[in-house]
Image 1 (cartoon, rainbow, N blue to C red):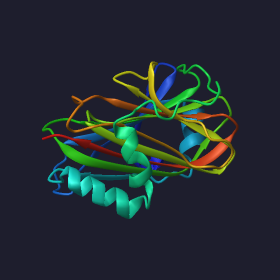
Image 2 (image 1 turned 60 degrees about the horizontal axis):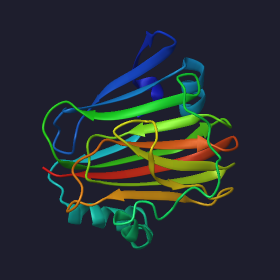
Image 3 (image 1 turned 180 degrees about the vertical axis):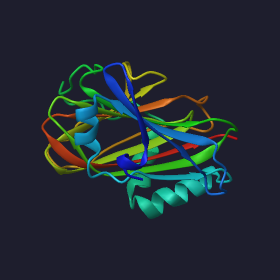
Image 4 (image 1 turned 45 degrees about the vertical axis):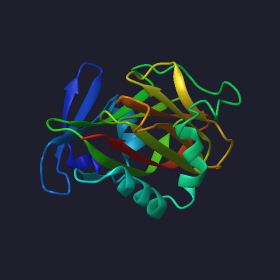
Amino acid sequence: MKLSELDSRKAGSRTRYHSIVADELGNKHFEVECSGPKALVERVMADADIGIRIRPRATQHDLQKELQESWPGAHQDLAPLAFDPFAKKPKRLRTTTPTAANSVVLRLSRTEGTGTVYAITLPSLVLPAGFNFFLAMPPACNIFATVAPLAGDADLFLTLNSPFPPTVAASVKGGTLVDSISFGSVFCFPPFVPFVRVNGFTTTVFNLTCFAFSLP
């Protein structure tokens, strides 16, 4: 799904791009919206092809299997983080305060029903230095996200129920090293709304992948 395929409308100083999304059963119970200053959204999303996979009958086991298939080796590295969300703290302050002018927000939301596995892939995003890209997911019990910079340096942060701190997980590796975060446990955490934030430490081109699981 390209940005040009979404309906757009002006909303104050920001432009909103919107589309209805169906799950694997064909139920159109979801919507995706991208918003931000028009020029910034078009720069960030110019080459991105939004991939969304929604599996309403999937289980946590299915999520684990999809992680293993789509993100080889990540499940081993991320498993301990589900029980220690502060295992990866930022090494140093390398982030700018998000504002309406320096942020693009992509939001996936459910319009009816509960519980599913969500997978989003966002290839070839372009983020200027000091700017932010947010991915807001539906309420979830587990969240896994990774940023693979193709060029430059992007840092990865997670907040819950709000785009603003406190930050519950972060990864700020330098250069084109892959950053990854994980949070939550189906047994220990009530559902929360994940806000995954990518900050451009330098101007960067990156792929963002995110998986989330919610109880039915």
